[in-house]
Length: 347
Ligand code: MG
Image (cartoon, rainbow, N blue to C red):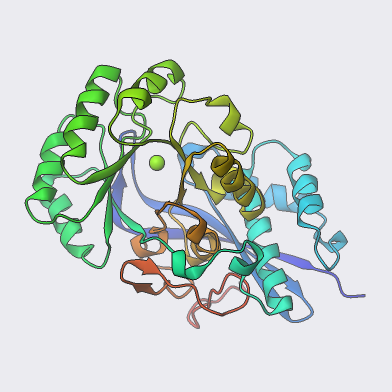
């Protein structure tokens, strides 16, 4: 009887621009692409592992070696598979996400449906994706903003000492809506509140992780007073974290690499809606695989930040198609990614 076979391919994504946020700078991101082969059909998955999150290509490969994919039978029981994979080891959320994505891709392809259908996500409701501009010199930031003309939303990283100068220099050249990501870079709640009012006047839509993730009380104080929604990113990794943050935030940034993939991300969206929280679907530096997987859920979100493939120069897969700033979901089965002919995954 045919069984699923797993193949893992370590790969290094090269960034178009050095990427700086409040806490670090880097020029590459290690990933592991996986292929699940079943009777001639291939499901693609990806683990993206920015170094500061603690996973490595080695830890991912070691995790995959523990997973008995041959036991998975069709039709796939995603909940049972999720529980099994999650029980093998704590952490390893990106490696777990790679398996989850590849299984959904395989499932979609075998059933000839795009994965968005599984989640009842209507492509007509797809929000525009933001393009992230890292912390840089004002001249480089302006240049990147001009290069991002196809995007209908800009995600601006703040948290150094010239936040207002950055925003003012962008507003001098465009009125494109902005969302702000501070990556825990503000240390004082009063400063954060002053900034929230100042930013609200600048066509800014929300502020992501303004204060350190452990400062729940200060963040709750800020959320209660802020004219802009305060969104949790570093403070919320997985489903169980939603309850821990109580009423400190008005929304959450869900990323497949943090929460082990589509199965748990879909549950988190549902839980957020039950709690009247806003939903942002975000990403790491990723190829089209993890990005297009997240895009299958994106119509269920309020905001979308899926710019990963637009920030790299060596995507092994075709870059998603952007129309009116929105990632296009097609009728292609699975997650809908197409591998470039030039990418040889058989070392
Ligand atoms: Mg963030």
